Image (tube, rainbow, N blue to C red; front, side, top):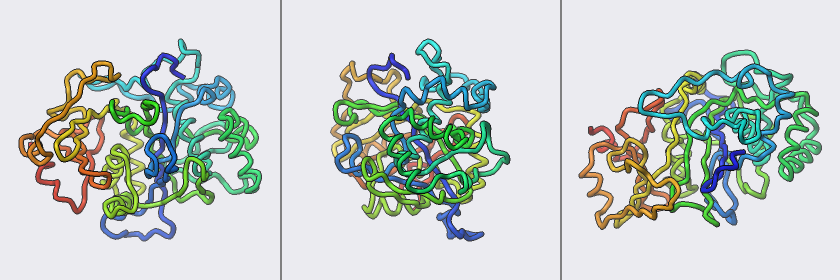
Length: 378
């Protein structure tokens, strides 16, 4: 773990996409042939209470344990594909670029963060993303589920889940017990979000979070909320999730909303898998939204937006406050280069992006919205 961090903690989260049960060859427009797993956080949580989020959580020291090297392949980066150098003017996200050896871990961060995302998915949703043996599963498509015969009985699995929740080091013990390893090769690097200054949770908590994407052939046979951190579990297509959000059935924090809008570009699970597998080799940059307070809402500015600061205040020590008496609509009319999330209230978000995406990524897609006029202008 990066002990030098003082202003935020490292975390990992997983966009878990799986084929719909009995999916149609030609799904309805905008629905797609896959669903994404969403978990509702406990209303008593100190960070984003009651929000629907992707599974994930804080990185633990056990995720960086050298003991994992006894299970995973010994090849460079444990068999993960190399990430190309960042394009000119950009840099590899510090979360991934940090050398972990001086911090006491021989395990690369890109491996440890994947282990964290897989462990947290088991803790929160009861889903085990493992592969038998000690290496990546064969085949180039979406990952198959762990064979049922490799799973212990439900009662035993539940006991293992409680043990891992109490002590992250027990996840490695579970893998040894099952003769399996975390399927780190099925997780593709997707994005990296840093909690904005001024949007920290209880106690000033801020998180530097690695977002991964994993495509599964079908829904895992076992999934259930833990009724501690998570109180409900939902499988939904990205478009349907956004519709639920707009009808105020559920709500998302801005990063989750942004990423669901990005997934709306893909109606096919295999298309999403191919895109994410190819794109992951490009890496990603760290995004810290900077909040501009308007008279009737907020604008979360992202890198590339014309209003994004040249030297953003990452730590909050500069006490910089961006605010204006103007309305959001007036700010939008005055601008032309957008990479921003506009918030009017908890269930009224819109993404405005007309910059060229970096790292061969895909800009968000909004459906059934009046935002396109701003989005198409340059």
